[in-house]
Length: 469
Image 1: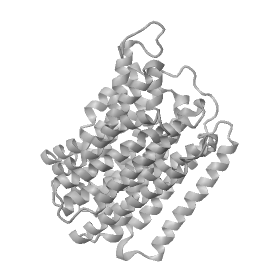
Image 2: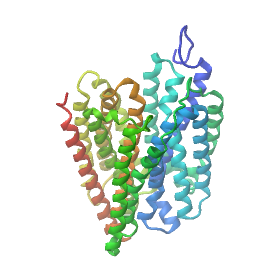
Image 3: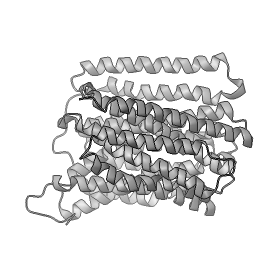
Image 4: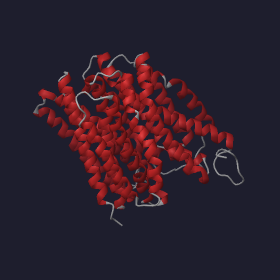
């Protein structure tokens, strides 16, 4: 009955609804697969291009940074240009840049193509839930969003395994070339079946807000990159000065953004949603937790492949318990958050998550596959218990008419947290890894303890909201 037409049904007719859902789900799967598979391949890409690990981090970081810088812009742009224009255009950019990644023969070209991929992904991810809302009637919306969440978790579980299989049989370029057939099909479906908004916004676009919203995350990541690219034994006062300059630019842009948004007739992001302390604390908790996850997801492939000597395929298998734990825990945590305080459930999940991170940070010198998998499973269960209730906390503490902005803020916190985590591991590898096995193992374990620290900060913030009205 999920796709059948009923009297008085909202949304699209049954067949058109099915095709639209396929287009959105294929796009979600591609973006999830792309981000997860590439992390597994970073050590192999670094060796193939003969570059340092701290430099090749930008293959992942460039994608996340571009998406974090443009998510808010595309979320505000969609009501003006329409879903049927923005969604296929974003897919086209993502698909063509995937081809560009596969054809890249230098690190700089590959990073540039990944940045374009991130922009294309942001154009679709920023409006994915809104597209589903326009496609499905209210009575099916919760079910289809649950299916979409399950797809993300399942894709995260399968992607490293698929990536490891491709790397064991083919070169790393096939990780990007695989996006071409589903990308072309999704573009075709999106152009044919996605609906337009019933009423487009005609107010002027908040250009100053868009410009400043991109500068803030960009400057913060460039501050970290200034240390990562020039770190290690050659770290000088000039390097620190460059990083401080970018940090000052980020702070100035952030202050200017707040000033402009308070005075804009149609702001890019209404600041009124942050008047709820519970919403703001949930957003900060989300960002800190995704910093931990971002650090860990980048650090572990280097530990598994370069330190423990596992193949890319085995390394991918070692990742699988984490998203499987999310799949097992997230649905139950979501149901519990309907009966008990979501802040309490999510804080409990963070406590389990930080336990798993500490277990990974204390892995012995020669760890078995089972040992690693059990510790990763604890992380996944904890993160699954945290994420669903925390998302519910964010969305339920804003007015209904601002739910789309809350959803956009949630995506920005997730992407920006992952991006900051990726930048942090780049700095740590540059400072502590000297291209030998012992120093790289030391650097990875330091990174894992930084992830533990970030998660502890998330717990402190999360605990502070439990008793708030």
